[in-house]
Amino acid sequence: MTNAETLAMFKSTGALLDGHFRLTSGRHSDSYFQCAKVLQHPGHLSAICSAIAGHFRDAGITTVISPAIGGIVVGTEVGRQLGVKTIFAERKEGVMTIRRGFVIEPSEKVLVVEDVITTGGSVAEVIELVEAAGATVAGVGSVVDRSNGRVKLTGNQYSLLSLEVVSHAPEECPLCKQGVPIYAPGSRTNPQG
Image 1 (cartoon, helix red, strand yellow):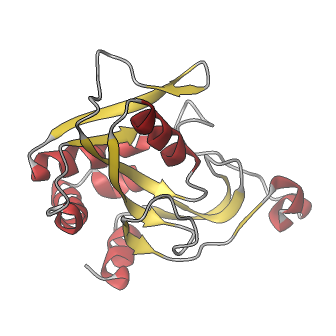
Image 2: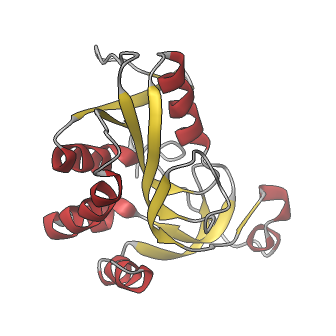
Image 3: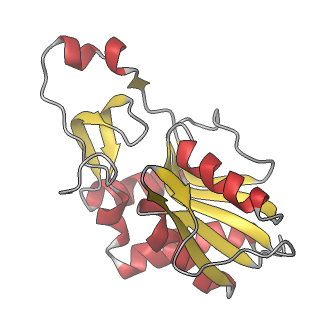
């Protein structure tokens, strides 16, 4: 899938939003990728994850891990397509942890899968967990890379849609200065949606 095809998929499902948004990273932007809206369609989910799984098919992946909550659907489908164990990490009292009886063994080659990367903060936290377990981070896959490749998390990194979407630190945000109402659709910043 090309960037144009993937972007068209987002637009046709209403998954690319325009407005004033507080991203999960805390930065502000005039656009927001609501991956859940495109991933709710099984055909789109399968096609998107097929591209990600295809990139890593020969990397010897034994486990896929995703940060909750946004990456879980993508990670689960990528893991299914690769035929490997699929787990997720989640925040407990603000700290990314591996819970629910999930275990990463030192012998595992782990692929970290996320829906959207802006600063890469959540993925970096998951990478730390994998490395702390003594396992190997074999790659990072994502649906959208909002940094257009500037955020480097590992040597083998792949995003289906890579483009530069402008974001601002809150104190530098022109939309805040104009008094435009802000929305926080991300799961960490807005429990309702």
